[in-house]
Every structure is written in C-alpha cells, then in structure tokens.
Length: 328
Image (cartoon, rainbow, N blue to C red):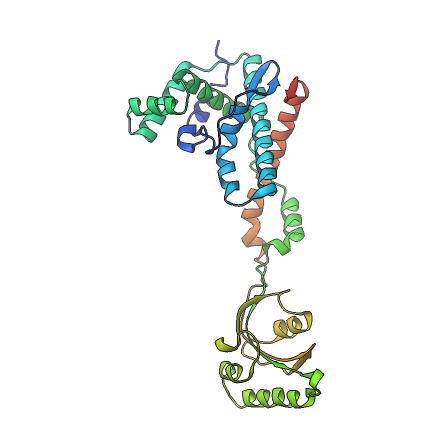
C-alpha cells in the first residue's frame, strides 16, 4: 500500500537534477584506481567510486585554486564531505523503506523521460550511449534517480519549511553584523612625497620645498602637475594617483589625515619617518550601512535558511545515532 508521501514525491520528482547534466559521474582526469569500500551503513556499502563521482566537480574547482599540500588537504576535505553526504543519503533511503513507503514506478520513468527530453533533445539512443560511456547501466541510473527522489521527499516530510522568524532575532542579527553590511570606506587619493634627507642634514631645506609646493597648491596649481614635478613617490609619473584606497592601506598617521579630509581638500605637510607628505582626497565612497528596513528581507531569508538547516541536522543526527556506520 502506498502511504501518504505521494504528494511530496511528486514535488521532489520535478526538482532533482540529473548527474548527466551536472557532470557528477565522471571523476577528474586522474588515473583509474581499483574500487573499494569507503563505508558500510547498516549493511549497505558505499564505494570509493561513488565518493569520487560526487566530489569530482568540487575537485575540479579546487585544482584551479590550490596547489601542492594545500590542494591535497582541500581534496581530502571534499571527499570526506562527499562520503558524509552519501552516508546521510543512504540513511534517508533506509528510513524510507523502514517506514514502508513506496515509490510508484512511473515517477522514475517520468523523470528519465524528462532528462532525455531536456538534456538530450528527446534522443534516447544518445542518452543510453552517454550512460555506457560513464560505465552506468540504465538500471543503475534509475536506481540513482529513485534514491534522489526519495531523499528529496523524505527531507520535505521531516524538515518542515520555515516561513517566519522572530522580529527580535532579526533586529539582533542586524545589530551584531553591522560591519558585514557596511560598505568598505575608501578615498580616491593623490600624494606627493618629498624625502627629508635627514641623514644629509637637509631636513629644513626639504621641508621648505614641501611648504612651497603646498603654497602653490593653495594658489590653484594642479596637484597632478606638482606631483609630476616634485614627488619622489612611485606614482610620480601618474600625477601621484593612488586610486581608491581602503583603510589599513596607508600608515596610521597618513590614514587618519586622508580619511578625515573632505573631498577636494589638500592636507598640510605631514612628516612621517624619512619623508614629508602632501595628500589630496578627490572623492570618498563607502562607509555607509544600509538601513534595517532595507536589509530586513535579506536577514529574514538568511535566518530562515539557517533554521531549516538546523532542523535538518537534528533529523539526520537522529538517523545517525540509531545506525551502524563504519568508515574505511
């Protein structure tokens, strides 16, 4: 007898992606290894090839981001996560059968037909050849799709959708994470650097030059032209243009002056270490935090997702606690 999971199965059948279009069945271009047992879940076996098949897309991305020992570490973590995911899926499928639910055969057949139509233009022969190229039989593929539908339906049954969140929690989250929502404060900066030449005993003369430059700027001389003529900073040729600068880029005394200057204003002569500096802030941006009203929908969505994830983890933890699981 088919128990009342039918509606959830119907919904699940429409949202599961095929591994053929995900590319999840094929591992990276690594040497083939002899398959073996990665884990046993209440007597059901999970193989290394299943783990590799699931982690392959993630591994391809990691190979573009890491190298050497760090790559090995990241790949190991990806495979560990894939194994845990497969264990959880197996526990869910076992729970489905233990509760004596049934999946009508036509659900799987309809799913296969959708895949053939959407991913292979309705060409069943191409679909079969693709399965064969990936060393899967049609029976094995149907079993995989069936398990996916079951997992999705069981999650829908056991993890109730979260549709509301406490207004107090939303407000508290906003207060505690203001820094995350605040755009980085930046200034568009030009700079002139004049060495003090203190070792040569020329500090007074060099400061006089810096003050003279400041006077010319006050009389309307273009800052970029003054930088090209006098600055000994690496940005001299570009008129002292430092572009957009974030906080903690400059030395603290320079940062303090730069971020307190109104746009269009020029600083006084600043002596710091072996140099004198004159700065001009052309523009400012960032530093603003969006209002609570604007961020509220985003925060509510995030908190609902976190609560849903928490409920799912509680459910899975219960399944794991009752199971015999051995990893190899």
